Image (cartoon, rainbow, N blue to C red; front, side, top):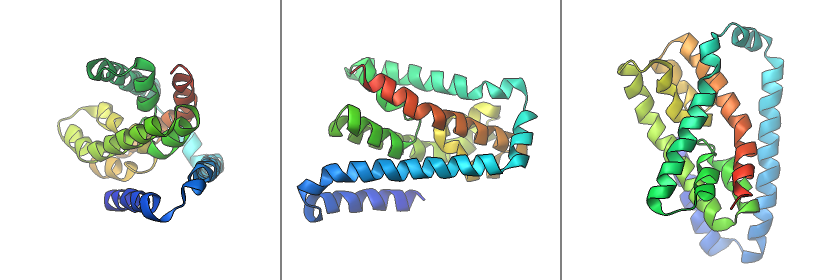
Length: 199
């Protein structure tokens, strides 16, 4: 997945530089938004059709239900501190960090509201978050961090990093990870747009 992701980015850079006419680039953002909406619709259909999943989510411990909230707050606090250290305005930092690892959606949303430069930084930042999460989740699990071990994955714990989590943890943690990813994925469009409008 990592090789595929990086290869796609490199191919896109090459195509943007040498193959795609500049007049078509603004249209790509429109198509990308529609494709992402189709993905979100597919996720919603999957969740709605899975009655066993909803039943299992109902049986989760109340403390587990708060994990996405604490994860989101930790991420936003981290990017606030990072923005101050790097001399970036806090709304820019928050709009980038509120992607929670969902690089495709956050970058498209930011390109619409904040411009291509910030969107590109958001894309790379959230890709790097996912690339860091892939080796760090097993490490935190081995060090007995419990549910906190899944939080580096952010929104990707419902898809990309879920396989890693299921391999290094138990069934209950995997279920919490899936729920964690769903909630953060739902927060991404709301928070990214909210912070971007403050820029």
